[in-house]
Image 1 (cartoon, rainbow, N blue to C red):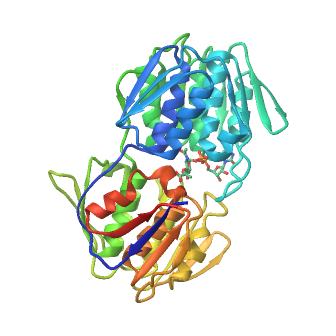
Image 2 (cartoon, helix red, strand yellow):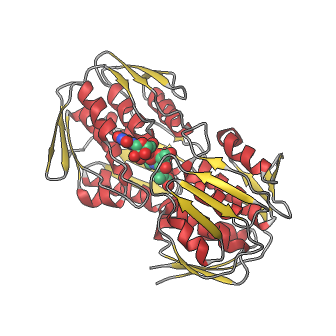
Image 3 (spheres, rainbow, N blue to C red):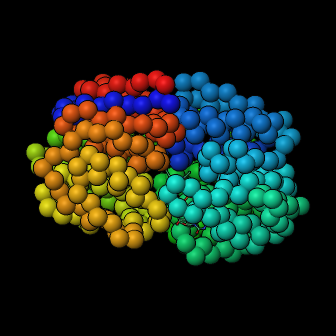
Length: 418
Ligand code: EPU
């Protein structure tokens, strides 16, 4: 298992190229199931999760190739409509094949995801919506088995805002007979990107990015050509935190700052400065960060996927900050690791109170999930001495060449293969 060794204390300076968004790439890849023929997409990041999705589609009979950010998927030869346990347990986003399969082929067998490191994460809302659209669903030996001759439009209200739930049902509705209304839908930029991609395929969707989405089903969609996905806002936010904590000066190339309003406002309050330049967004870290409180909420609120990185920054800020996690019940796994580095954090339920300390000290730590790994990198880059981060396969699932990008801007970071 690879690990990262980081010697902290360097002020990072230079340009960082932001990759395509993991959480846009994954649903968009599954959208290729909806039309027979060859689809291709640009700016797909070279990540473990993308490879897992490619493998899942290949195992279902599609042909998949990837070269330098271009993914090509030919779904015309698909003949197996199953996402097995092995795939779903490796990557929850595998459930995004459920609705496209039922919409195009009338059936799907998808393993139930089960719990994961950050919370229970059920898919009851995906199933509720699909059932409302006329699918017959049964659960058997850990699998969801769904069938429908043709889905029909329905009005669906989400009790909880769900990103992949909204995406899955949007993909069910585009080929259904009649109109579907999704209420209290997720408004994340990745939902809009998927909607734009479906519209390019011939779908009729209004309101993506708002909380009510209206979809008028069509009989057929055409494959997608040369669609370029949006930049990764969480990778951008992670590098912003890195500039913030190291007192660095980084230029984010190819990012979309408008997707990070809440994050940038909080970082500004904490002392980080932003300047638009011709080369990209310049992010300048302060001499001393100021403690600020944060509460995670669905987009356009502060993203749960940035909570751990923000907490890492707050460990050395002036004052005490309170971070409330409201999306996932177990997303504080990084706390114990940050404490190993000298952070002063107490938690109670979904609330963490962080008392800023003068400095962090390097220590051996363990990555427990994707964003937790990112937070340990943020912390290690400012810590005194050496930090070894174990189990960085979590990081490789969602960050493209993070260590190489950091090296380029002056970080003392080394990947040890093992
Ligand atoms: N929920 C339900 N029932 C459902 C679906 C969700 O109760 O049927 C609950 C969840 O348990 C959670 C809340 O609703 O408490 C929100 O979960 P959501 O469904 O929005 O999460 P997701 O779609 O599984 C996506 C991202 C996550 C990100 C969350 C929240 C992808 C592939 N994943 O997950 O990304 O944290 O939205 O923004 O888009 C990551 O990239 O590290 C990551 C975990």
